[in-house]
Length: 409
Image (tube, rainbow, N blue to C red):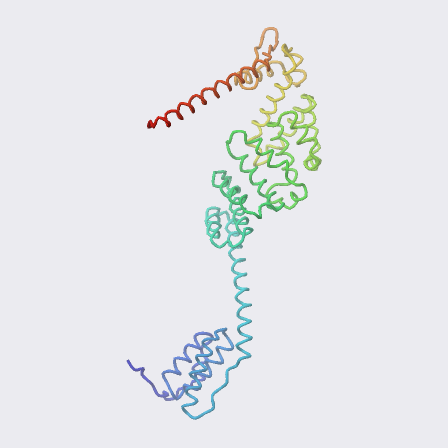
């Protein structure tokens, strides 16, 4: 199929016509006219080349257009135009710089888009967009930032599902997570996630996550937790889950965590009072803290449970040295009335986990059952021996069956 050629239309001014256009549209129209109308081809190609050089980085189109222009010039016996190598070199460099800049702007635009999604409250869309960026993460730090951003959206929505733990585990698996700042952020996210779940023994995990956070790096994570929050969350969680020896070594004698406790002098006094068995002062401070902590979005739902665990530990710790305890003196030590103390003791004994005792409600006496540690050690040793003997006999029986070529189903 041959291409149809046209002559110059009457009263057609190429310059006036083509100047109505710009950019790629102008280039396309010039090239189209150059191919359709041979009398205007040289003028059209020159116009296209000038526009290409002025408005684009398209080196290939420039070379193609110049080749077509020179073909037309040679047909008419005119001197062909030389290649503008300086423009080509400059354009190639400028093109690379512009491409890098655009990619950077695109990355920033996407980042700002996600932030805007979070700002306007469209959490699900923000999570979906963050999840899509996973395919574009080219470094470990990119992956960590993606995980952190996703976790932040989930926590902002009070969503503490296993999905959050998945992103935390993914971030922990990255080599860059060993950096102080990344580690601190991970531990903060982990603590907040645990506080929002019903996981058993979660308070010990919260305490272990927070008490080892370097004080210096915590200052740059105030978009997650403040240094005061780390002190309060870590201190209360440790108080409710650590034994007396751990409270002494990992809290009171921990040079790093002491910096956090220094921000909350009342909390430090609370921990020290508990360790030194000054229970009256301990629970007096807890009651003072209670109203303040009710305004904390993460600790408020855990507050009653934390106070209950601290109280149970204090009661057990008080009763350990004695076989008979006067409830009136005990109530005085805890700064509560006898009836309230009796209710706490009934609840604690009813759990049958940490304390074995009987209550003489008439005489207000608690009689604890002192466990014979030596007898328990002997019993556990005999039980372990019996288990070992059973497993050994089962193993020997299996070996004998195999030797006899008997099939075991």
